[in-house]
Length: 561
Image (tube, rainbow, N blue to C red; front, side, top):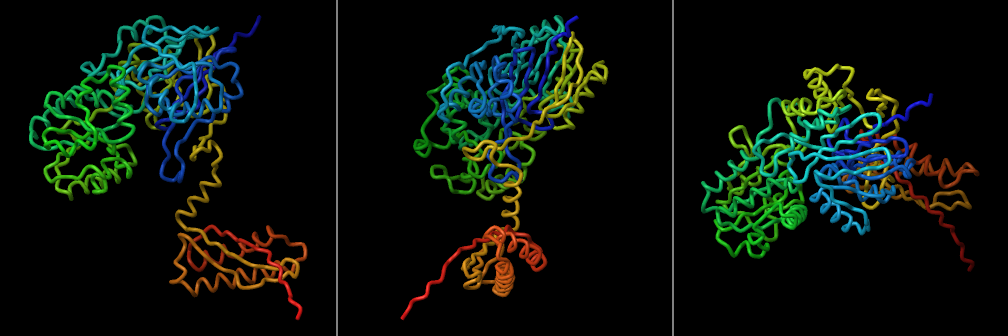
């Protein structure tokens, strides 16, 4: 009897973290990839632009890849596509319309030509050799968000993508009927969004945010209104535009990402009233109550439009004491300090600032709270649950929610990146793992920056660098003059002359001693200087700068009389 072919679920990113979502379903010679996101670097990743999953597994199985399926157009689900296409041959990409336009713009910006970028709708069914893929509409903060149902010979996998349940949304209502219909057919495993698993109850409806914003426009009829929000929150942008239309205000957009998202949304029919948008040079020609400024910078990003407006460095916008500034956003963990600094600068300018609080619903998340996660489980009735898109505590609590809904604890999987699940005849078990390290993007370099470089950057950021320049005559094996010491980020030379003289003396003694060895080369001398200086400097200053010896071989010449 032949052993049945197993269906593998391979996790490349999105577990134990927010972002970098990427999952693969493999059956025989078919691989379908779901999402290709990035995450953004934490503070200790100095100089890093993006963090990617490791694509080694996909490169090794390149010939099996049938398609990349995108659930929606946020960066943590599409941001890795340009880097993936530079590494792996992906025969086709299928994305909903809004995501497709954002992907096309992203590829154009990087001069990547890709000719098989396709749009799917809720009615699309994709059939590969052994795998069938279909879709169901969900509610999220960006249009065209979908869950994905993948049917294999061994069972059915459903991934929710990012979702919430909002019965009074700005856009279309999630297709609960199709979810229930898929659930009746039988779902073997559910991969479900865990971002807000720790939040009790139901999330706030986007329509309540609409009401709160409208109240501000009703009250402040003579003031200029400045709104900062997430550029990717298309439904929020949509109802800001609708509110401006009702209150006869023009709109000026500041921020490239905001501008791109609005242009794509207007072209796709998600946002109306194109006539409301004006150019930056027109803002100051209008009365305050005739204009709304829509900008990036809700997270206090130093170079974003609102931060520059608050600091008084924006070229076109200068704050007025009666301006109204609205933060229609939540503070992402880790950004609280920068947001507070921006708000303080705004208060110093005398403007009135509104943020989302228990009293004012100026923001709601696009992710499901605890009760919504329960509803998704009840609709789809999965046999197994694999929480994804969340830190460990979020995944753990989501798994506990599954148990509350009657699922056996052993049927929940709290995994980490690189883990593999094996599905055979409707039964699932953990089946090993592959290496899944983070891959760093630094400018145009992908994966070239490793731990050693990042450690050096941290040292330079905290302790600085010290350069020792020494002129020697390698032939005569002698140091010609005392070494020259220069530093960056370590100490000021003019204010620490005694310390510099001690360092010069240690370096000189080290070089002379090493030159006595007839077999010593330049590398040996550099290593000896570094080895001798590090403990001495650490003892004298308590710091451990990077030591960079520069040894120059200069031959002395003698002139005959």
